[in-house]
Length: 461
Ligand SMILES: Cc1cc2nc3c(=O)[nH]c(=O)nc-3n(C[C@H](O)[C@H](O)[C@H](O)COP(=O)(O)OP(=O)(O)OC[C@H]3O[C@@H](n4cnc5c(N)ncnc54)[C@H](O)[C@@H]3O)c2cc1C
Image 1 (cartoon, rainbow, N blue to C red):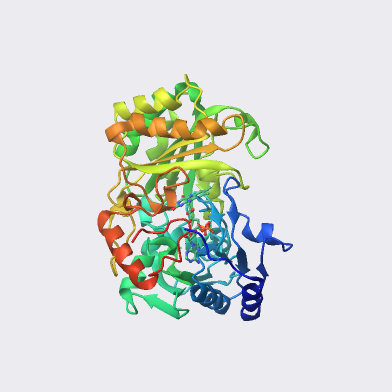
Image 2 (cartoon, rainbow, N blue to C red):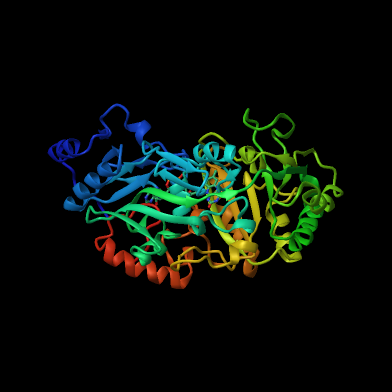
């Protein structure tokens, strides 16, 4: 749908109504203000607002709603799966308030705060946060999508621990929603992404945790069959105190890759356990006796170093990706993975990752019903390829072929945070459960009847 044209007078009016920068493509700073983590996704709104507080967000939303201008929102750009062409983008990166109360174990963060910031404030008090594979991601954006944490099997989704949201809806109203106040909207924001308004702040419960036993084991890619088969059997019996994923990694020749792994094809087992050290090490021990690990970093660690478990790239990159729920890690699944991404293939994908789900992730949290998908999933498969020559053009067919080969072992459904650029139609029914999608669609018709919040993961009404 084409965005209505925005005149210089319209922009001038917007500048009067907000205190932060209001930039068009002609203005200096526009590129910085619209930059996303995924460098492959063009983000070109007609106008970008660098909101400095919740009032700026409300004023920008009211301005756009009055003109029927589509509205996007971005904090870090880690979820910039789809291009933005036209409309208004609200950049929340300046909303950096972050408080941690060690007595109540409650954190309050502005919409621009990354997990890294709140983690730094929480760890000195023996508290942890439920970040995903990298703490570079935004707290609010990832939690609105459910938020699949490293320690999800032990503590559930990040959204399960939210106490309240401050949200600006398209009528320009500031609302604080929680289990008592507008409980249906509160429930829908837990997993419903940015469909119903712009969140300006969020309060959530922190996790008491002094440290953990975690890290990664890298095996030679040539042993992928042995390692995947062993991981499948071993991970099936893990208690909830242990989380794991495994990835086939084709690592580029880049400075950000540790020296022994550069330009190598390796299998990367990730492990994080909250069990006492001896028990956590005992649980992992079977995986230490297979193959010939190239590198083993697993040991006692501060939660501050949690990013060392997945070792996600710390810098923006151009990439194409797709994720789906995976039904099993049977022999047939492993054969399909090996046939399309194993050592004897020239698979162009940087990452073929399988995360073990279950445990606390499968439990419904207290409070109003949410729309977090993936509670019934056994595994998640996440596929990423770099969108740089010479392999860029080979990435989309490689993802399609691998998902096709997995056949009935892969679900049609995904989770909103993992759909990715190539994961099918955004906002469609396979991103949520059927019931969750229906509830979101009904609420969208009420809170956003003209579908102005239509960028990225916008639910279809
Ligand atoms: C390297 C990498 C690792 C990741 N690992 C994990 C993981 O382990 N677990 C996991 O669950 N996810 C993971 N993700 C996905 C990530 O959680 C989502 O992409 C999430 O949307 C990022 O939020 P953001 O605010 O950082 O990104 P942004 O691109 O800034 O925002 C993404 C979307 O979130 C919504 N949004 C953001 N802020 C607001 C707001 N204030 N109000 C309303 N809507 C808003 C909007 O729909 C927006 O388009 C990962 C992504 C990357 C790139």
